[in-house]
Length: 294
Image 1 (cartoon, helix red, strand yellow):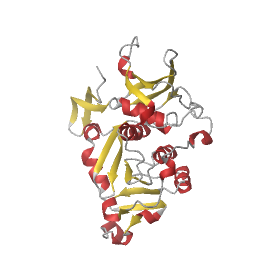
Image 2 (image 1 turned 90 degrees about the horizontal axis):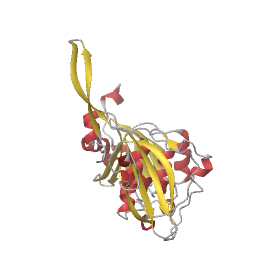
Image 3 (image 1 turned 90 degrees about the vertical axis):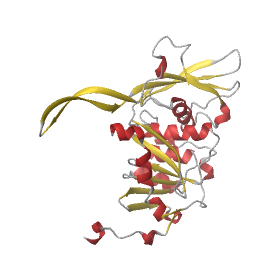
Image 4 (image 1 turned 45 degrees about the horizontal axis):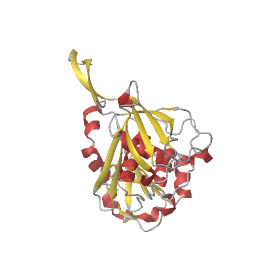
């Protein structure tokens, strides 16, 4: 049985009215070991690629998305199967997923110089160098200038995402990545305790459904925009990234390098454009808020 995304635990709640025993819903966090099977028929090799702390759910998407954004596989046609290791594993089966590549497909493991263990908050911990992270893919070359979004639609996206975050609504403890059309239609949303896991799940879902490159959509991040998230988005061909929180300096540099529109602090009918502002239209039509008048 696959682990649940939410755990209900007994707690003691303390407030001005006193002390009470009750239950609370928490976002589950479990390790996921990603294994890769590859090679010619009769000479298959199984290799442990990574362990990440994640919220159970959409594990196959997480595994294939991770392998793609790391540049280990090139596209969905490389993959024969991705499933939990229920037969070959002696224990902890629900937390091991094995991605089997088609016979003859050789993974590119040279750019995956990382420690075997990665935390849910750091998707690039253990990398040999920043140059190893700058993975080149067919999708990254698809970034262009034909995509754009109207300001009024852009400022509406965080509320749409918030309304769709089922697990976050119950626990308040998850990050989310969401993919929208430029008309504001929500296409995919994925949640996880790790922000990079949420994005890997989203990209994995698109990869598994042959939807890459995502160069006509908009990515919304529920938190900050880090270098690793921009890198993963570029791998998928995404050219408009909006974050509710702040971007890092490296994220801005990478977005500028790949001609990606990067928006930060998207909340309360406000936002900052850090790179490639030409994809955000009608920026002079945001209604004035009370905060602007102060």
